[in-house]
Length: 188
Length: 334
Image (cartoon, rainbow over all chains, first blue to last red):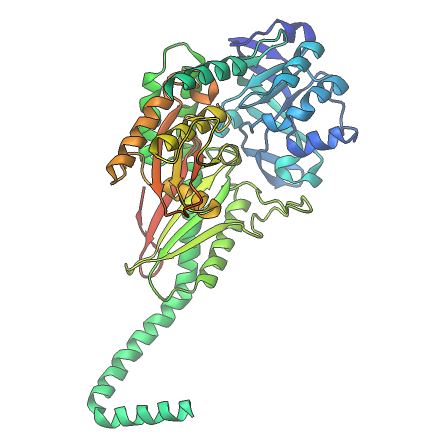
């Protein structure tokens, strides 16, 4: 198990490889479909994204008092929908990592290599185990996109993920896909 | 004119059996009183029942699914990412139940299946369901999950055109049965529909062709639908009815076998073969890719041969209740 702490350095990120189990402590920023679309269209992010990890997640959040939020459930959403935009966010905003589920494609993999980034896989559907690792909601931006699509700034402790795409061109998803396609040919 | 005739008939009937009518009237009055009382109570009872159904569906995995998930955990090799994934899944199931909070943050499309006797007011029933959905969202059992497709607006209520998705079905029983399925977007997105024959897959218009396209759908889904998953499949129908029926296949428990021998065999064979593909939990690689497969059929046109596949994630949220006459919950179905 590797401990990764905020601020995340490019050097540390580049050392990670496919299969590494990592616990992240520090800040995560959620960002999913609408956020990526808006960034792609040229809107400046509400806070600098440099050095951050973007979490593909649309949490269930309750507002307990004005501006006081509690995360009720927060697992990853499917990442592949951000495939057209993710490399661009890496290039233009200097993020260090992405957390999601299901893996991403070739463009993102190349982006990881070029800009020093990794793809962390969280366990899809495990919204309670992951929400337990969120200590607090520090801020929220772009709420006009609706609660699941807003940018939630989360403080996490030992948030469990697996590296499935690294900065050296390694991709577990590419391998599993190739192997399963090969297996399918034999089985049908 | 018609009214007058009816009035005359009533008078005539009254004259024929005065005694009986008198007795019946008393009886009817009692019944009527009861009914009024029911009328006031039942919509509140129904609201409470639906709210509780939503809470349980969102936070507790049905027994049949949990049993199979735990079995697969035993199967995965130790110290692999597959085992790691299954361990987190197990912990998550326990934690969600304990905290009474959503198993998965994507509380999905809200699919209600209501079987009812003749005479139910579907409009009123739907209104009560909508009220319960709004409340469940405010309580955090459901995510604010309903987005206007043209404006992109999410008004946070979770109701709107097509939301929730309520399906009524009339049955001969006296009681009302409500089933609920919460189907997340990740698994919904990997659903697939094939028109046979399919040249690329060498899939013809027969059960072997059906088998080939189902396996193709599994490989295409990889880990994106939050596997290990469960498939609901419909052979035949049109594009709309096929998908609709494929979701209803998911209402069957995992240990249920088709009563059509060929389909029962195919259901089992798909699971065995899928688990040889090596996709594994979350697409990490591993021994368990599929937890179950349920296949049904509908008639088709001579020109069409659709195979519709709905994928359900491991976070399989399905529950159901039978209501008492006063619309309180009398029995849980899963």
